[in-house]
View (cartoon, rainbow over the protein chains, first blue to last red):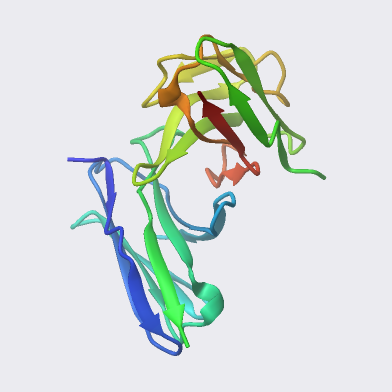
Length: 110
Length: 112
């Protein structure tokens, strides 16, 4: 089993739709979780950290489920500009190392 | 504040050539890392460093060397380039308290 797994998609959704991505991780000792956004041929950029209590930033909500070892990202009211690849990242056990999922591609259409 | 910078942006090598990918950060981050990104494979960790003078291997270290003589710089060396090393290389840095990694713009390497 890979350390961090994501559905590669693509997820094709209309503008205004709500879409959710999940990311599973295998190391129960992991403590830090992140969602990154990567546009085509660009570097990944942090979208949001994922806290135990869940967190929200505008249209984006991230949640952590430790029991089932997954994190999720919910995007409400999708915009065309949300089209990108979304990468989850999890630290390895008790270290600073981050392992990334392969990314989920989102395409929002008019 | 330039963040994380990488040079060159593009490079073409012939099999067997060596080269160094440069990475520098001006945020005084202790942690730096190198990733390669290939289609369908996501970001894979090559080497990382938790501070000057300390380096360690990631998931795919073979064929690459690193050193960390200063906090700011973390060069990646390809000793004898192979076509399998054709990829996009990203350098990243973070502070210990946050884990959040900041990425450089990447180097697109093609090995013929």
